[in-house]
Length: 487
Image (cartoon, rainbow, N blue to C red; front, side, top):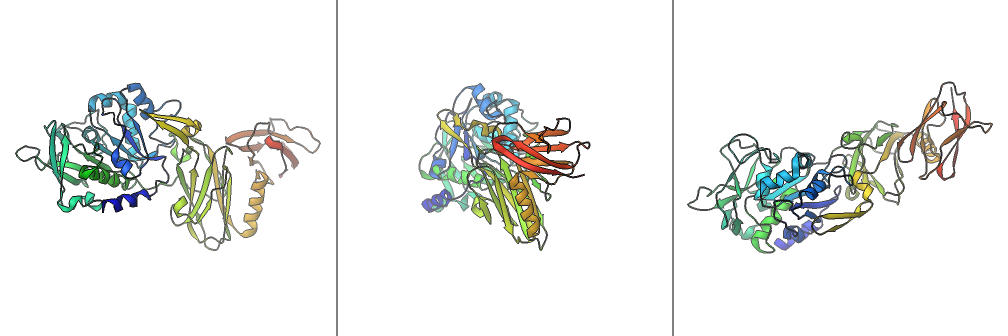
């Protein structure tokens, strides 16, 4: 039974994320370098396992290499599916993170990443371990309160209450009980005060004769479809490489991963309106795309349209993939149409598309190399950590209209003829963009305004005083195209 469950998870997908789990064993926490449950489940893992506070802040809160920190994409979305936080000293760890680090973890959770933790990791998820107020050191992910069991350095058992979500992943021998769990000042969830609606009791302590007996030893909570799920325990099952303790930690991870937030749309595109994705977290709907991340868009196509065209353009040195799906989010594993050819320029045409909402998935397949000793050391395409700019455009119409526009885009000018302004799509490379009249004279810059709006995408605006006629555009890579200016 356990083997079958494990194998099933090995074939699940982590599409849209860099990796599965990030393990926090930084300042004040147990400096663990292995998470046996993640290994048993075939999950990808990175971790911090060092006492260095400056290092912890650089990894979590960000630095020039990765402005948003390793946990977040440029738009603030989770880069990992889940966090696991080890046991240890809550206050020293939180002080090392600082408010900026704590805010990154809150952003991770709110944007859809799940949170798991043991002992100190469970405390940190709550509002406070006191009966009033809010601890400035805690993450405030689960809006409930914890209390100290008052038991240190002991081995205890946990009851599994009927209906516990963990039973969907493992039978635990069928006796609803797990023995031999280490407890060292871990918490229980306070069910008698400020108990958040929707909180699920996963486990209860077996400490007969002690006030912690039958208290909530493990709990889960998910506040919204788009946020992650908190799944935490007061004991320490994370250090076991076998037995029911291992299977408990595996079930905790699985329930957390199954609670990752639903994908979100960046925008519903208007036909023919170019969208430039070149911003950061200050404008997530226009943000650059990170490594192995998906951006999702949609366009509404009326019944009877003869074609749907989608154009994605980025720097040729990156790999951007394009996926389309009718009436559902478009991923590599579940799309109706896909273009994964090398490069970052994709132009896809669907003949006679069904009427309704079409979803567009843009995937950045370029990523970094990683060596993880006590913290992740990245190499290779490091610029992808701060995101890849690109543009996306979509339109629908009759066959003739779509073919004409596709030809224009392949030529590099849109629209053409032009009345006042146009977009210019150029091959990657260095070189001047210039406009020449029919006599071969270079048009003065006061008459032509050229603005970069993304990698290899430019906006040309022509002064009203520039007469109508045929002009020649030149640019990098031997680019030469005629342009017709109308008045």
